[in-house]
Amino acid sequence: MHSSRRDGLEILDRVGGGDSFASGLIYGLMELGDVRMAVEYGAAHGALAMTTPGDTSMATRREVERLIAGGNARVQR
Image (cartoon, rainbow, N blue to C red; front, side, top):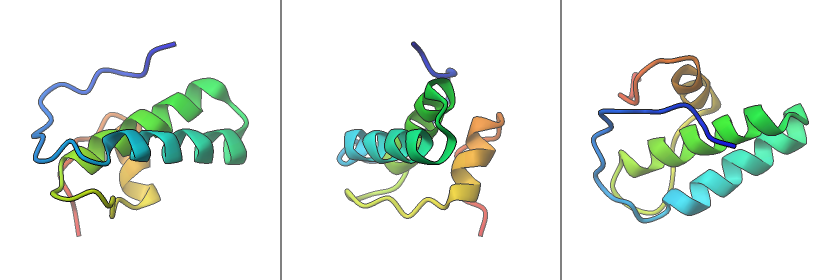
């Protein structure tokens, strides 16, 4: 199974990307029970984590869902 492509991400720091993928995947499985959407949540959360420095993701569920829906990874606060 593959997630949607997210071309053009500005990767600042890859540390924490895998953990962020795992947490997004687990969230998707627990809350949605849909494997395909869980993979999308994992990939989007992992991608967002790599666009910020450090190993801790500060991405919100809204930001993850916006990226899943086709938005970009730029933070809007």
